[in-house]
Image 1 (spheres, rainbow, N blue to C red):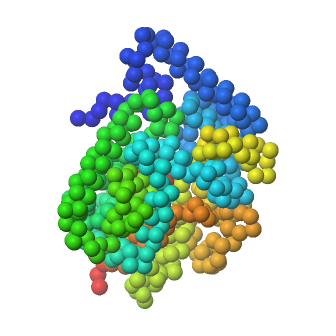
Image 2 (cartoon, helix red, strand yellow; image 1 turned 30 degrees about the horizontal axis):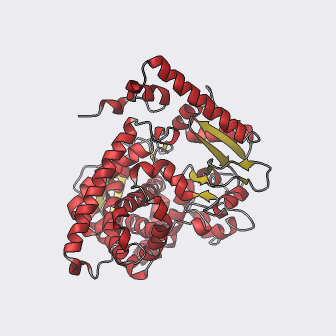
Image 3 (cartoon, helix red, strand yellow; image 1 turned 180 degrees about the vertical axis):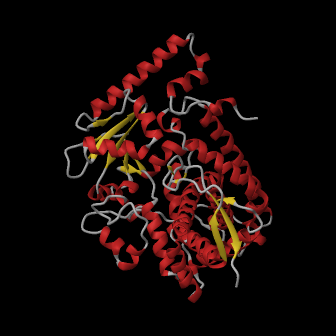
Amino acid sequence: MQDEMDILPTTNALALSRLVIPNLFPSLASFVLLISASLLFAALSRFTKAEKVPCAHDGWPIVGNIVSYSRDPLSYLRKAIAQHGPVFEVNMIFTSTLWLRGTDLNKAYFETKEEVWSFGDGMGLFLNKVVSPGYFDNLKTFVASLSRGINRKVALDHYTNVARTTSQSFFSKNTQSAEVDLFEHISKLVHAIIVQCLMGPDFYEKNGAELYSLLHGLEADIGNILNFVLPEWIPHPAALRLKRKKERIGAIFAERLKERKAKPEAWIDAQDYISYTLNDSSTAHLNDLYAAHHTLLMFAAHTSTVASISWTIVELLKSPTSMDALRQELSCDPNPLSSRYLQAALKETGRHYSGISTLRLARQSVEVPKTDIMVPQGSVVSVSPYLTHHDPAIYLHAEQWYPERWLEEPDLAKRLNKAGQLAYVPFGAGAHRCPGEKLAGIIASVVVGTLARDFDIAWGTKEGDTKSLDFSKIGSPWLKGDASVKITRREA
């Protein structure tokens, strides 16, 4: 039975908090008074700490920001930029985010050292609720291990084979269906590939379906704005659901790792990432944190990879000439990783459908470069890849999906990211570039290439509004309401 709290509005933090914990206070009036005082104190302290920073607002103080941003983040940010310029602050109850806009500020943002502005602490604002205590203390160790482990040639070759065989099997089975929802369909395929590559075949065979259900539940709840605007001590429904899912994932990892320990000889030649970490001296002793680590990896690898594949398919369906160009290349060389047009298409999707924001937490008070604005310690600092990638001053036909731009100028990405600016950042930049970029590229290339080469795909009865973006997930946007497609095997 659906939890009754699931149907409550998620944009009114005061109303939801009142329903969750009324018994902690002797009366409703005292509870409202306490929360109101807390909100006022939080707001005043933020304005005092960063009084030089213009504060964006929409409607009612603070609460209006929550409602407007959650309803339409793009419109909210564009309005704030138009009113306040490239640097402004957004207050949301117990958190405050300093937004930086511009290619020079992007560069400063990504090149600022971790001990000053922390990506790990920024992730923790959302993800502390789904990881084990102590994980973020070892984040640097795990990230280093990840970069080494998944970027070895033998590992990448293994991942390519997993993606190829899984895609063929998956699409072949679905030719028997009348039609499928595209993003949901690709989500299941990407999940199958990621679990096999990172966790191993044992996790997929015994827990693949359950992990998929848990992941979707985590995605739905971790993107809930209450996880960002309310402190951890307020046990709102989304946080409580996250706790239950975290505990179940932990139990699954305990079961599978116990089995591997009992039969280590069966995993000597395994190339999944867990096998690597179990044999890596830096991470072997941290196996009680593997569940937390892989929960974060599922978030990082899943949402944006699904978006990359699905939006590329959407655009190929909208542009038959683009689909024909891709198929012509694949008819000459069937290897998707060798297709220049496919790589250009995926690169363009990374630009056109990038994430709305990235988050870092200020560990030190520092001045924003080229301004007199001081970022207070404890502030959240954010940039928007999406707004950068849709800036008409940077990209010709910025609102158009145009993969040819990357073929007409092969070094476009390099040009956009030099001379003191960063204007193309789908995977971050510099020391903060995503270590899973190669794996994500392999999965996206193999899945889209396999589908275009070996199968026909057409719109189903639910075409959907392909301009309606859903930014509620962490990472790249999906399509609101999804769209259905029909997949059939191509005639030889």
